[in-house]
Amino acid sequence: MKSSKKIVVCVLCCALLFLFSCSVEDTGNENANNPANADIGGETGDNEGSVEDAGATFDRNAVTDNLPEMDFNGYDFTIFTGNLPDYIECLVAPEQNGEVINDAFYLANRTVEDRFNINIKVTEGEDHMAVAQARRIMLSGSEEFDVLFGHDYETGAASLEGFFVNLYSLKHLDFSKPWWPSHTIDSLTFNNKMYVYSNSMTTLGLDWTRLLYINKGMAQDLGLEVPYRDVFDGTWTLDKLTKLTRDIYTDINSDGQKDRDDKYGYIFTGPYYCSIEPFGINVVKKSGDTLEFDFANERTQKVVDMMYDLMVNSQGTFYFRPEEHLSVSMFTQGNGFIIKKHLMDARKTLRASDINYGILPFPKLDENQENYYVGYHDRLFAVPAASENLDRTSVIVEAMSAEGWKKVFPAYYEISMKHKFLADDESIEILDLIYSSRVLDFAYIYGIRYYMMLDALLGDTPNPSTDFSSYYEKNLGPAQRILDNIMVKFAELD
Image (cartoon, rainbow, N blue to C red):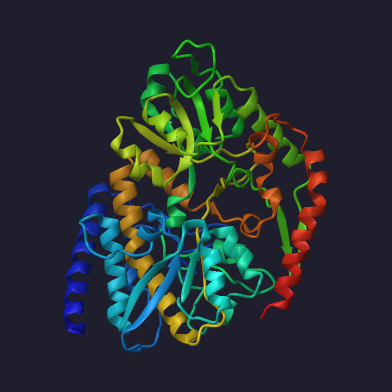
């Protein structure tokens, strides 16, 4: 049985490598990013990796995981997660279906199963209730799963209650390897401890990377230039986004009201997730075993003022909080010039539309800001502290992470995103910039309400306001109690 699985894996490996090599050869574009370490052109600690890393400029299989050869005797390695398709498809593939990302997951998991004689299983909970269900399972003393893949801030909250092991204590996890992006390690580590992780075991964090889509056909019709040059010159700023979109509005249905049936310059729908990261705002500052708020300053007030100008004052902006996916449908109908959405929308929706689109990062606050920053969310992994065999868990987690980086990332990033879902060289280059600029925010994961300050001031309110100072003072007490609790819990936990 084991030898037959090896034959299947070898055949699949050859097929994927052939597709990948053809993809790179066809485009000649070797500029891409990957969360790699310094030994192979990797990270600085400020971003995920160098441009050279994500492409086929080196043999990923040559990067070894240094794991011992072990036989786990057919063990069912179980991941517990919510029952949404987005969760499942970015973890496992039960069979091949000819879709390159699916088949890469199939190959990656079969490789790990064959190598360690295990079966990778997924147990599904109920969407957002999955973490609560996992808590009950762990409290009962039952070992029904080896790894939790749960809602980010719910998993973060559970980690403060001692449910999960400190990942630095696991013998076979090597955080210097490229399948452990340094920015996630930096973000999720506090007081030399880390209880949740985000890495190459999944592509959900890639899917949920926030960016802008621009309708290039509309730009041509309006006689406007797609601002690629500004992006490359480092001069793509919030003021330029506002000026570019503020006068683009057509009352298509002639009802005298700004509604979803009209045409706009800028459309954003849903809560203000990942909206402070582009401006380099860190709500929480870490120093050893201490956390403190470090954002009540003139720069933050400037962000609020300029976002108010874009979101409230601009005639060309449409915002509707209750329907997060409305912006995509308006865009595909040709009624949006620029929208803010996820990377996954390119492969799941936009490619099937008639819109000739490109991508942009969300802009800098101003030209004094040195770098672009790109916010994203992920579902987080965690390992139950009471697991009977943490060595086995760490071996399999490391192996799955390594195979995800070696097999799934190229299928997703190089073959699919660059050569199926993006249509111009500028967007491909900007994808590299976006990938190397991603930020995963500690404050969101641990439920610090200031992270959603733009939502509170501009989104989830009938009366948008620029009064950041009053908002800060009003929420300081509850926010400080949350911060104090995080410090206490991290100090108490093993």
